[in-house]
Length: 221
Image 1 (cartoon, rainbow, N blue to C red):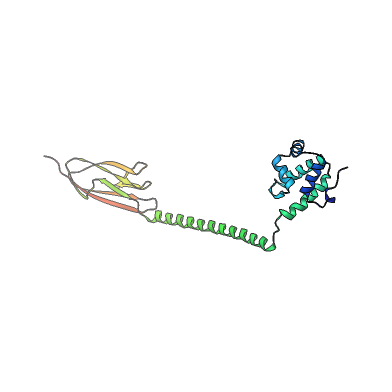
Image 2: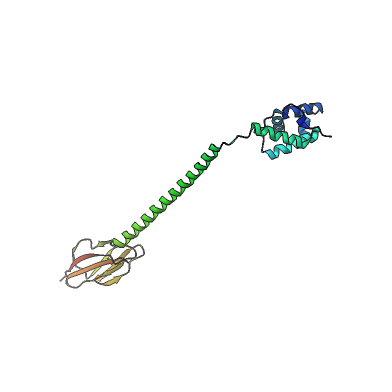
C-alpha cells in the first residue's frame, strides 16, 4: 500500500529524497525508470518548484516518482500544490488589481484617442485637398512659342506645352486632346499678318486659365 507523504514533517523534496534512498534507488536509476529528465529531477529533489515547467508537467513527474518509490500519488500532488502556493504564487492585492485595470483602461483610451486624432487629420487633409482641387485653376505651360509676341516666316506654327491631366484644352475654341501625362502638340495654320492665339485650359470644376500669343506671319517675297 502506498505511503502517505503528508505524514512526514519534512518538506516534500526532502521526503522524496529520503524515500528514494530508502528504496535504494540511485538518482540516475530513478531518472531512467521514471523518464523524468535529470535536470528536472534534480530541481524536484531540491524543492526548486518555481524553476520547473508548468504544474501539469510537474504533477506528471511527481506521479511517476510516487509510483516508483511507493508513495500515495494524490498526497504527493496535494503537498506539491501547498508548497508551490507558499513559495511561487504571488498574492495580488486589490490595489494592484485596480491599478492594472486602470492601466488597461488608460491604454485603451489613449489608443482610441490616437485613432480619433488620426481620423480627424485624415478627414481635414482630404477635405482641404478637395477644396484646393475645386478652387485652383489648372496648370498650363506653353513651351512653344515661349514669348508673347512672335514673328514667324513659316505658315505652320507648332504649339507645344503641358496642361493639368483631365483639363479641357482649346486653341481659339478648337479642342486639343493632350496625352495622358498632359503634354500636347498642335499645328496651327497662320494667316498673313497678325494672328492672335488663345490657349485655354478649363478644369472639371470650371476653373480656367488662358495664355495669349500674338504671332505675326511674314511671308517671304
